Image 1 (cartoon, rainbow, N blue to C red):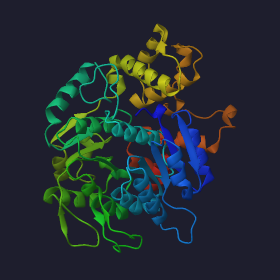
Image 2: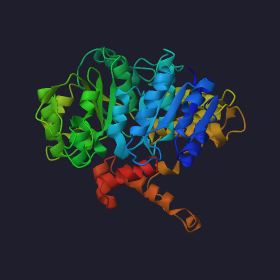
Image 3: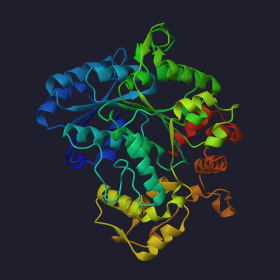
Image 4: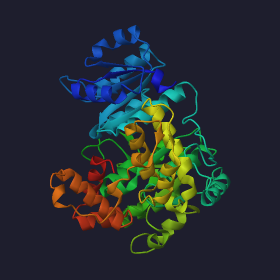
Length: 452
């Protein structure tokens, strides 16, 4: 089902959440229904042709355990078995959210969520409900999945390699700068593999502290530590039969590397708090923005682990090395955002295309995407001209504030400083955090805060 034709029901006793989701989805859907009291669920479902429900895990009651959300999830599945349900949960209730999947929920989102990720999750569920493909095929040449576009020679070489390795179970290491599309390539490989109908599980391992690393990847038994309120399977088990994608693998500690190597060698995981080994059957894909030559430094990364995760490597080129793909990508994003923001068909005049091709895009495809999105939103005409294309100053390191910039918010100054340091260290989060005087976890929180 197309999201534009869908009716979405949001049930949450927090009016701020209801308002935020309604504002986010009002231009994306046919109808948004909000409700604070879950007692009205049955009446709303009978009265309206609801396609998807966003349901909070906790409601005001004597004891907020998340069981309220599980109870109402069961009721929804009893009344309307075919309605998609996404659970809304806080980070501390992830165990309950995982339990909700076993109870029939289609997915869950953690507060605070990223708006684009929430929209993508809803679209995917509605597509699957109608039996359509997970993502619509864009125009342009794409041999490695529907999200990867390019006609350049370097991309042709990558597509050729992917066609050979995707059907195998070879472990793959994807290298490349930030914004080059490493996560999209991982999804494309999974979609072309023999495991395509099985789970694709992504974990940003670079953001996991040592204390969370084992629990997140290997799972835990109830009571294994203070906050372990329920048995929980780890990401290796969730990916059973499918693909496990470990992003930012170059930023994990040597201690974490040793634990990961043991799992990959034995093909077994043991949940925290138990002695029982569980066999795993997954295809492993890893990604990092750390160059392989730097990764091979034994003081930072174990060579035996590199060999284990790197049966085949794929180097995602920066956009400046595939300049001939800029027009294809720009037109793809223009079409995408014209549709999203209900604009007429958008194209570029020759001068605008020249401007795009003359810029080196330090932020790579991600920067191009945001540039086109901004241009489509702000343009007064269906033809984009050079003045409509404003490149982000966030991707230009080394700039200093002038006296005229004294009214810039501190948050913007902090964001710029973070971006400059990350660019200086070629995306190495550990080194950037050290220079900024932050822990890696604190830096990741700021990256999430500023949507970097």
